[in-house]
Length: 388
Length: 249
Ligand SMILES: Nc1ncnc2c1ncn2[C@@H]1O[C@H](COP(=O)(O)OP(=O)(O)OP(=O)(O)O)[C@@H](O)[C@H]1O
Ligand SMILES: [Mg+2]
Image (cartoon, rainbow over all chains, first blue to last red):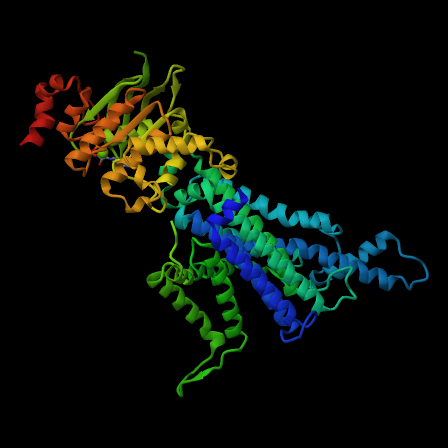
């Protein structure tokens, strides 16, 4: 069965091959394991880009295949980042505190250690108490479980409420925007228990690997991101092929018809919404240790809108399109906004790309929507005739 | 013959307009029935009510030997009770192949998990082949449904109904836009289907109805105007006034 799945979806094999070659290439050019042509910070950028590709694949499944234009998937991405960040920050602070208290003549009590950690982490928001949501922060295993459970449950409850009331189309998109806005506003508060607008920082330091340099850590996270993208891609390719793919594409094209065939459409939407939310969260959990910091701004509604733009530009309804869109646009975006593109002096006015990049992106989005609805991925249709 | 579906005293109002007015009608197991009536008579709305798309203001819709009420059920639950529906405008999944369309309709477990883990089986493939044969699309199984001709789409939709293996088929204007030969073939498909299940056909074309050779119900302004053989209803003066007179003029 597995063989026939690959045989029927040759693009999956090509994608995995390309991803492996890319991973190998970056590794032998990295500072840690190769020539050093690619700097550690660029390895991190590439690793983060792979995480963005993974959430884009999830977005393509929920939007391109199932027709639900969710503008809230970055909320799940951020929650995944926060969940893993809590352990990273707790464990690292704990190690530092124990080290500094070790020189004291009287050994510190567990209570003293706990207070000191609390003080260290929550001092910036004028508190030293551990909020309830940090109850599992000392356990990597439990926090990793939270990466999946918290966003998964949020998606399940939100989706159940929305789909059950048959909210569709623009109204659903607005509702998902409201969800991420509410979440981000909540996190901005100092008493949210997650350090308000300071967010969680120092996430690039992995507890237990203090002696390992960032060059090595960056490449390990890069591998992990590539692996996650590969597995996620394979999983979603399997989900959207076969009968499940038929049904969810049917829901996208004519929801009512699918109902009259006897399918409980709401369950399918909920299923797709929730699994894509969980995968988004996993992508976020891999992204933020490479970014080093997460704050509520990451969950701003605009982030989820960008996600839809990437998928649209890459070409929705094909998973590799989402990957191409996310990689291409996000890398280009950091090139433009990072001052990589030279400013254009027009005499009376100078085009500064840090400001004008968004205009360019907006125009590209409009152009793609109007003239190339299949996106960049559509180019592949010209190169390879699809056998049907 | 036992009653399969009983609609009694049903009324529906859209913004003050009574589209269905105290409608009562019954259908027996394995019967073929034609419903005719002028535009706006409420034929499609009647199907909407039975299939759960529209909730009536009052009345009862009773199904099967257990006398279940369909009114509290969702569209998918009603479909799973064994009621299949073909829409007035042909609606197939245009992006997918004929085989995929039929596979989706085929009577199989409908839960997301069952569908996710679904494996192609020989018996399913054979059922699809058999239905394709019946609707004359054997050679088109691998074609994208969007490429089919209008008539072929109508047949595909009827095929999807048959694949659901329902006890009652509601077929809304199956012959619209078809050539004479296509109509004849459609009649054959429907008559064949009605041997094992109840089939209710809404149609405007009198020639088509004549060929179906079955009991006819005439709807007008949301209720039954006349019922009986085609000869019987076409000789009814009120039917001639409101329907035949107009369409024959
Ligand atoms: N959702 C709706 N909202 C408002 N009015 C409606 C709605 N659905 C149907 N109607 C009205 O109810 C009446 C019955 O419509 P229906 O579609 O059932 O007629 P029909 O017998 O199928 O006609 P036709 O032969 O043209 O298909 C029409 O006057 C129609 O305009
Ligand atoms: Mg109608």
